[in-house]
Image (cartoon, one colour):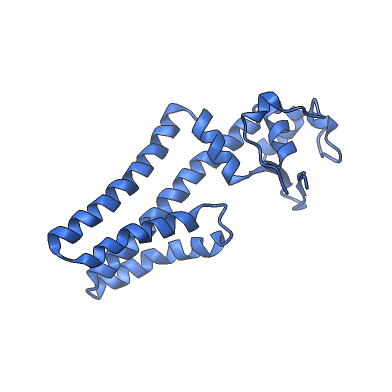
Amino acid sequence: MKRRVTVIDQAEAQLDWSSVADIPKFPFETFDHMDAAIAIKSFNVGVDPLAAAEWSSRFNGGTRKAVVAALSLLLVIAAAASVVAAIVTSNYWLIAAAPIQMAAFYVSHPASPIRKWVTVGGALSVLAFADLLFNGWVTAATLVAYAGLTFAAVRAAAFIANSSFRKALVKDEELFLAAFASGACTLRNNRTKRVYGVSSE
């Protein structure tokens, strides 16, 4: 079974490598050379979304953490608003917004096995919302909007976590080694499409 870096393990990990040069079949002799290749986009670092989320929750800066918290708060407020609106207007179909949000939240995470289909669905939700609203199906359009909002919020939070973790990895060789050893990141040659990574059974 593949291990996942917890980032906490960075200080505790007993690594067999002291630099990227020690990684078998790795394409770079020094971390600086790897960083330079990434800077010109000939290589890029891929990250495990779950490891990125964990790292982000512990080590991300105040602004990024505040944005993620605001996105989470937005979803909670939206769910509460749907219940209040259902009671006030006696349109109890709006109560379905909360379970729709929960389902959308679950499948929208980049680690979801159906993430590609969810991405397509998220894009189509905008068209579905406009079509339903134009045809007078206001409640249905509202429920679709809830799904689309949840999808957008989850993906935005994931983008912040992934990009922050990726930036940290290319600045800190020790963190990169710990993450690479645990399978939390990979290195991809954008020209040949070859992916360098390790996994543990």
